Length: 179
Ligand SMILES: *[C@@H]1O[C@H](CO)[C@@H](O)[C@H](O)[C@H]1NC(C)=O
Ligand SMILES: *[C@@H]1O[C@H](CO)[C@@H](O)[C@H](O)[C@H]1NC(C)=O
Image 1 (cartoon, rainbow, N blue to C red):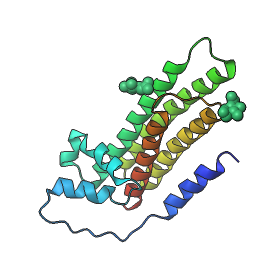
Image 2 (cartoon, rainbow, N blue to C red; image 1 turned 45 degrees about the horizontal axis):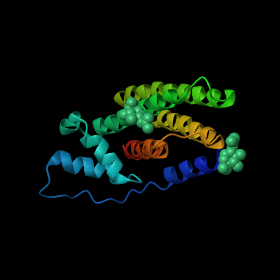
Image 3 (cartoon, rainbow, N blue to C red; image 1 turned 90 degrees about the horizontal axis):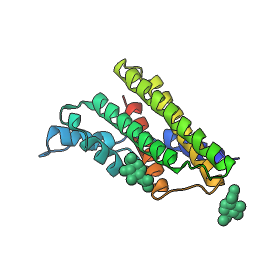
Image 4 (cartoon, rainbow, N blue to C red; image 1 turned 90 degrees about the vertical axis):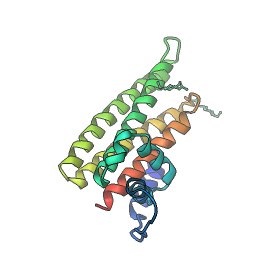
């Protein structure tokens, strides 16, 4: 039963992508307008915009480059979460708790490999494969989150970091879906 809810959620947001957006903005710098436009259909646009604007490459980015920046943000987020989880692993913990933490660290490392591949696929204009790798990396996070919550394993801001990861994944999928 564990994966049903997140998968439903994922399917829902993949199906609910909306195509009716207005592309007109005036008196705004081109890069700013393009970032706003690309992030507009994300479930949480501010998370997407903040990620893109924090990357200096965004100044010269076209929409494909913007998607690449969002995917790098997911990967950076995976790195932070994975680092935080490995910091939690201590010798005195229950064996099962340690096992779950190690499993999560591995899952986030696999997610980062998939996200690096996704950026390559984006460069090759294979957008279907890009999204399928982003979805795969998202599944890794969803599985880890559930496994930790079953064992009441948490650290400060963990929910927040993982939610950002999910919001960035949603943003990337929606941007690439409109290419
Ligand atoms: C998680 O990792 C980041 C980056 O290493 C660090 O800045 C942050 O303080 C860590 N958070 C927690 C709650 O350990
Ligand atoms: C997690 O917490 C809940 C509620 O506090 C408790 O019922 C459950 O037994 C805990 N699970 C584990 C694996 O410790």
